[in-house]
Image (cartoon, rainbow over all chains, first blue to last red; front, side, top):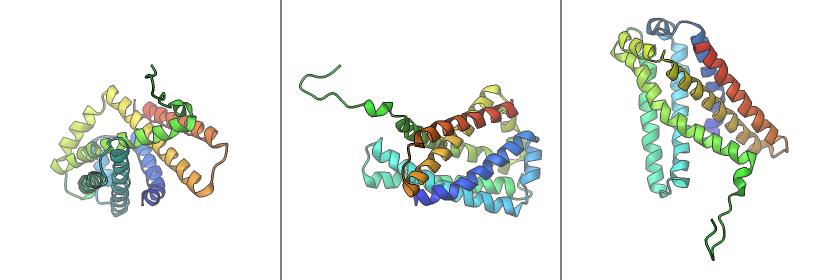
Length: 105
Length: 121
């Protein structure tokens, strides 16, 4: 699952890097950013998917670090993974909603 | 200092360039996963109102913040390229050119981070 999420993430990360470079070349005021993102179904789908795959990938990665560097048992590492994944998904989808949902800000 | 009667701890593997590549991949991943909740919380400020997000964005105009952002971009590229290297090694086998590729990947990450920094400063 870690390798699969990593392979999936490559195009998402490249897309996000392209977005960042475009955005830094344009205006970075909140009004201008939200003007570009608000109401866009395409970007909503892209970033919702990105958030979910990142959450899976990051959570599994943190589990490995917890075991190898934190020297915790597998059950505690699984708990770290689940909490991390849940936090990233919840905060990430909230952030996507924040910048995409029209009329929110 | 070697302890008497005990074998000296083997650390020569740390001089291997590809060990550095693997460590860079791990450290960059750790930094990114710790950064992400902050990134999401910042964007979530838009739920309050546009002014809240605008306030945060103006704080992010500080030079030290822009330096940190460029560092994060470099970490993202390091992690991406390190991950691609792993996928290639695991699916297409090893080649001696891997070490050169790892060095080139680090250079690309630094370059992209620098380009980002120049754009935002």
